Image (cartoon, rainbow, N blue to C red; front, top):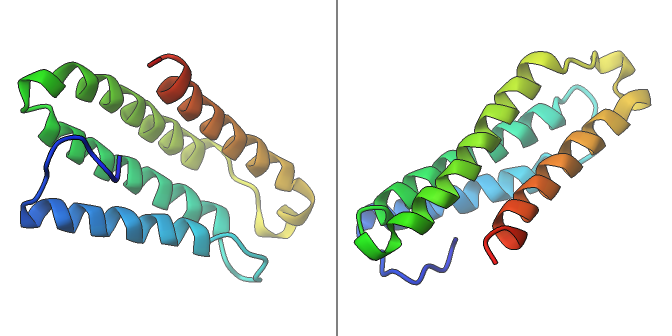
Length: 126
């Protein structure tokens, strides 16, 4: 997504790319083993807002007639991911005191998000 086939050279496009990369960095910074932090929540929120930025980028490329089908296809996956993250945030609540012994839950959530996203973008599109 960062390198598009379509020229997006307006100031707004640069700002969206900047925010997207900042969210990617936030996801990386949220991975760690520090006390009194909700790393899993920060990661999921950064992931969700990154997907929201991608929806905005694809919404703009949707205005190009030859890119419309691909943009809609990609926006569907982003919207599905946003809904899943909202559901996970609402339904999965591991208390901080039990987080150390139940990290497998978050590993499973991250693995499923990655696998679904990869399958949708790589396997189904080609």
